[in-house]
Image (cartoon, rainbow, N blue to C red; front, top):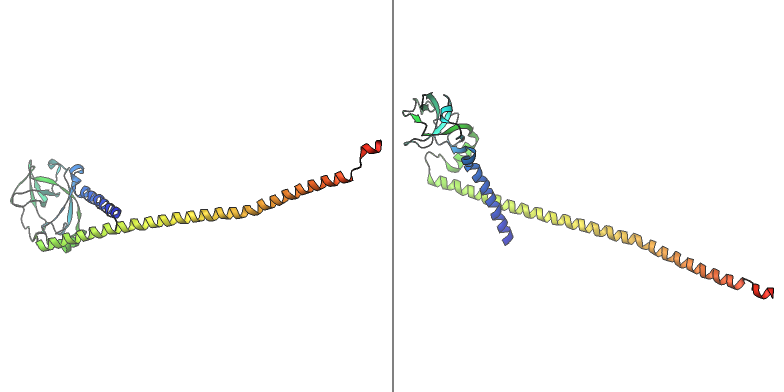
Length: 232
């Protein structure tokens, strides 16, 4: 791998990292952000280790009973619960898993605690997150390190694959250009070969015509009578 390939690989990695950053941090401009659910209080609607998309543009006053929201609490950061009751300036929330949340939350949610409304859930990614990082509630450092190592390996493999693909495309392009150049050369030589007999034939015809003119001149001079001497 030469220097140019390394530079291209770094550039590709930079573009990929930028796209991922836009995906996960674009909520600052688009008003959305993804978070991982690290509790089973919202099962079976939102599984543990699944991802939910939070709409931070929805205002606190527009929330209705039954909406699932995210809010901050001094004891539990980033709670995702359903609105159980709505007051004039406050909300009462609760999880939907009656085994872990048999009663409503014992605190009141104010507008200052509110983060956003859940608009979409992705339960399909929960098994993958379980495999990579384990139960995020436990936050096992070895399992988390394993997950990031696997992700880093995937990123490296993707970068190398992109580099190899670009090299393959470049080789195919060069081969195609070589084939085109060879085809043009063969057609040019073929035209040259076909034009040579025509040139020779024209030269022979020219020589025959010149010879015929010279011969006819000689014959006419030799056999034409001298009119001047006869009159005298």
